Amino acid sequence: MRVNTADRGPVAFAAVLCGLLLAGPALAHEGTGLAGGFVAGLLHPVTGPDHLLAMVAVGLWGAFLGRPLVYVLPVVFPTVMAFGGALGMIAATLPPVEIGIALSVLLLGVAIALAFRAPVWAACVLVAVFAIFHGYAHGQELPSAADPLGYSVGFVLSTGFLHVVGIGLGLLKDRPHGALITRGMGGLIALAGVYFTGAALLGA
Amino acid sequence: MGGALPPALLCAALGVALSFAAWRSVIVGLALVTVSAVAGAFAPLPESWRELVLVGCWLTVAAVAALVHLPSGVGLPLASVAALLAGGFAGAAVAAAGAPLDLSIALPCALLCLPGRWLVVRGRGIVVKVLSSWLIAVAVLAAALSLAVPTAGYEPDHME
Image 1 (tube, rainbow over the protein chains, first blue to last red):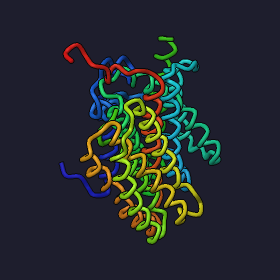
Image 2: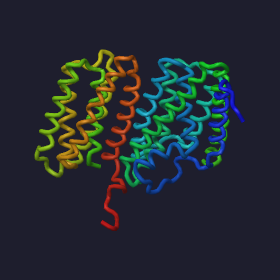
Image 3: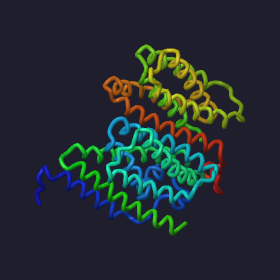
């Protein structure tokens, strides 16, 4: 079947969507045991749909909100995530982390779907709080990884690239029907967030 | 925890910071980091300083990478101090937990300032700032790893 040039955007979107829906059901942050180094860290966020969707959503929301948040959020997230990781390593007390991670997917998805234009400070605070939870989960895993330093380099890089993917998807908003597509992606992310939140609440 | 990675990321952090400096500061910074790193690599450090030097190395990575957020850029005095600190700790990290050849991997990472500066001049400095946030994240995690818990990954296993 020949695909018209004008139809490539929706087709690519559908392909990405199918890829996400067909992804394995394994959640991130479930017992990594003695994970390998750099490669394991690089793959970890990609193989856990909750982390993957949250990272993509951060980039997507940033792109949707435009300057300065398109670049401030990808700077805030990894920096705060590292402090969350340190909290995880010392096993500091936090509210249930899996629920926090699931809520991050849900709320970011809702924010994109509703085209919520948060003030810069509010978006930064919200993303920073979510970053604490994601970092905490990683921090708890790091001490048991076979090469924690390589692992942390891998997952920080992977997280950053997922933000870039989200920004790339978010830039679709400037194309015809793009805003609708990005909001639709937000809706799908929110739906996944509902599932993750339900699963986390049932598991808590 | 040693090897070429800590000094390499430290030199990369300096390169990222120098992306926001004037050419004169870049040249002075690159010269100072080279001299101080070579001097540091041959410093006789007691074995007991190993952990301390590595933690210092990671904290310096975070501090130097954070310089990109200074609104006025990185001036000559700051570039010089950052280069001396980065070089000193990179050299000390090599002396304490690496091999002298690790510097040949680490020092070229400071040349990251060349593409970085190219981006900054063209108004794409945000790419460099995002990269700096990744370096800060890795440095904070690595410092916490050194301080918080003994990790199974660095303890000898039953074969060693």
